[in-house]
Amino acid sequence: MINVEAVYWLIGALFIAWASLIARDANHPHRLGASSFWGLLGLCFFYGTWVQAGTAPAWILGVAVLGLVALAATGRIKHGQTKTSTPAEREASAARFGNRLFIPALTIPLVTVVLVLAAPVLKIGSTPILDPKNTTLVALALGAVVATIVAVVLLKPKNKLGPVIESRRILESIGWAALLPQMLSTLGILFTKAGVGTAVSTLVTGLMPKGSLLAAVIVYCVGLFVFTVLMGNGFAAFPIMTAAIGWPVLVQQFHGNPAIVFAIGMLAGFCGTLCTPMAANFNLVPAALLEMKNKYGVITAQLGTAFPLLVVNTALMYFLAF
Amino acid sequence: MLVLIGVLLVIVGFAIRLNPLVVVTVAGIVTALLGGLNPLQILEAFGSGFASSRSVTIFAVVLPVIGIIEYFGLQEQAKNLIAKLARLTAGRVLLAYLAIRQITAAVGLTSIGGHAQAVRPLVFPMAEGAALRRYGHVPEHIKERIKGHSAAADNVGVFFGEDVFVAVGSILLITTFVDTTYHLHLEPLQLALWAIPTAIAAFLIHGFRLLRLDRALDREFANTTTADEAAATAGDTK
Image (tube, rainbow over all chains, first blue to last red):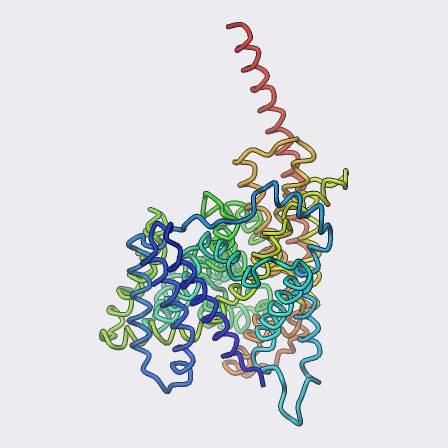
């Protein structure tokens, strides 16, 4: 079986490969800092396997993670100048290969989707080939590997390591933002452990006027929205707000249809995801990937959709569920 | 209530634009201390948090193939392709992507699209190519806006498309949580069905904004051109 841990090892190996490229780049402004950051990050992906299995102490990984943050915070991972093709070379190559350039890019989703759909029947004996708990992740990683091979065969780069060399350029433009989604997810766990959820829901319920259905619907939807903005994730907000208002007030007291209340409530939370830097993998990493000057540029573009949609969700719940 | 200090730290830190990694780490440590964790437990929390969230860094696996096809001119080819289609504008390109992203997510194909594998190499260059064809040149601040909207189209499409599919994480989270906590028996299909009105509203609102983006760009270019001409005329009289 291809376990999801194999995917994490592939990611770890890539980070280490990028780190060694940086280590050998004499012109890099922060050669030592940047290569240690990416190298250490890569090692963490391997070590994480045993932490996840409970067979290695987690605090060592904790020390390493804080080390990564320290390297990033002291500005040691600024990116170097990677040599790549010139705009003129790219135009010439685009003219030469034409639409064939799209083939590797389209191979990724194609292979992924085929594998996801075929996963239930892909078995050796009774063992599934793809990790059944993480089919999409494993399928995406395989899709990416196949697409890389297709690209190398099709485009015949002079250096067979071209894919790794060229992706270092993209990685360095993402920079420390690559670590942020994982740090936020840790913060979410710490928030939950420390009881931030209960504190917020006490606060929110205290503000709610008793006996008004409209007020209860608004507090539930807006509460999910605000909570998602703070936690960066609707999944963390949902159980807490539902325990505070969704179930006791909207369903039990006002006899709302639970399927409608909960489905629309979750979507009100998603409006919050559009507005928050805490949802780094959706909002900050893409800004870095696109090399935007304003790292909040994606959020700015989404605000105009998030707020009207929150109003629509509140209205839909009020009119459909009761 | 004291634990909310951590939340406050995050808000202030992001607002004054400190390095988000530092903000998040400090907020995490403060929250953990307030919650009564000892230093060893805090380190363990960071370690196990990292280990259990490695899946969000999955975008790294698509970078090699994207890197090499970009080297061979993928973005340029995406621009060229769009430049041939006269009726396409930046807003319409993004509207088409929004529709594709939302529909494929609604049938469970969330792995079609995504920021690393679709938005950077294909969607943004196509939208930029359409703007380039229409206006002749695309200044930096317009590029920024198109970039922001390219990523936004992906997010809006996937968020409000995937919930229409029954086997997605958020639907399963609702049913598991509600069924175990309140002893209800909700069918995933019911929840997915009631996600459809919001999905339609999201498409209408965001689609409308993308079409308005075109008009906003038109206006902005009209202004810049007149300003340029004015500057040029002023230059002539000197």
